[in-house]
Image 1: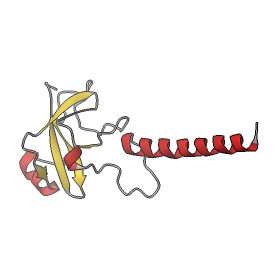
Image 2 (image 1 turned 90 degrees about the vertical axis):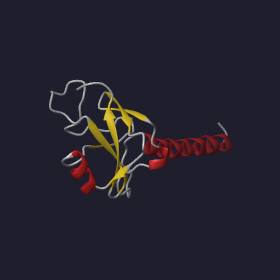
Image 3 (image 1 turned 135 degrees about the horizontal axis):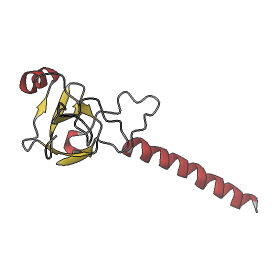
Length: 125
């Protein structure tokens, strides 16, 4: 193998690792060094429905955003906040396929430091 071919192969491998790391950090729950909070999402890019904790959830049609105080006043209590990326952990309290009858049927996606968008469970607990 020539030196030029070896160098080209090394460059391709390094670029591939960098691209794979960037893709995984943005699409999959993979905290990156220096990343403050991987759980904050762009409100404008949230889909109308998500699939987390093994269940389907639908976004509020009005696209309202709530602060923690508003969540407590409107929904009663602390929000169950989820990360929508694949392989993110399911937080305690959210309705799952095996949760008991006492589970949260409304979950929240964090879109800013103190701003949340609600998603309601599709179907019963």
